[in-house]
Image (cartoon, rainbow, N blue to C red; front, side, top):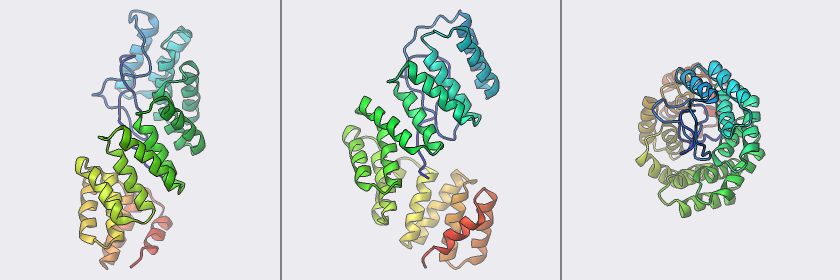
Length: 300
């Protein structure tokens, strides 16, 4: 499964100035104001409607998702025709995602888009959720709509490229990553996408080159793990060991990294350490048969 990289942000505080992007599998960052680039609304904060939104914000600050959801529902019921309801519905959907209520969240993102059909952030959030639900083609439709609405949007093109990589459509993937580089030459996502594409094609040397460009600017455990996997394929074991060590320092509970270290230990004939890493990978959530299969397929 492709891992999508997006920026974390909070859910609600002010409405109408910048961008709210909800990361897959992450919660809001309390230090970042929750604002959305797609909605521009002048607020009368003395109204009951906005008092209810303020109450929701208090609960969000405490990560009390059920009560935050209740307050947002009350706000919608109190003023069903309010111009800010698209944003409220979007935030409601996000809170539902944090609670694992994926289908409800999907409905509310869709209701919000019925009110503001060209809201780029909403389309991106719904697309990410559709991917979580395995509805890839519907997600592609949302990402393509964003790409059509915003010629400079990086996230939609990166996601479309990564989906194409997963589907083995490397020509389309290359087109998406080329568009990113052409329209946003400072974005590292073009190099990142090409790194994953080269890895998927078995071109590990070029995968390492592209991933290294990104890692130089951003020490990310997921990227380090993928580069380590390429190093293992190239039998550059010391390089792989360095990346695995650094990635584990950053995310010590990532099961996949223990699989990589088990591969490294197998290639080094350290079978006792390999078995310990297998147990750790299982402890952190991977199926034992899957782990054993990954190691059996490791070429010597």
